[in-house]
Image (cartoon, rainbow, N blue to C red; front, side, top):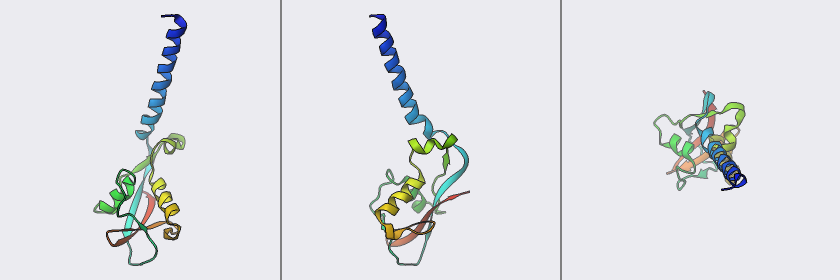
Length: 127
């Protein structure tokens, strides 16, 4: 094998490993106090986003919060310099997606959602 060909293959392998690391590594990074997606049952019957058929793969924080005993999802920590949000799914993404789907369901601090007949107010908090 020629030296040029070998060097090209090594360079391609290094780039592939670097891209894989950029895709996997940010999920494990975290710093600072965690953010949580919290849901609280509300009595109001205003417009709410229907989340009966959403998947926990698409909305893991929302489904986790609704199904938890304390109404709080797993924590999400931002990475150094805020780079983690570029590569990973965040609770902010879920609230923004629901707000875009049903603009009338948005509130000042979050979004109203409806699941199995119950209406919840979902918002991201930091504790």
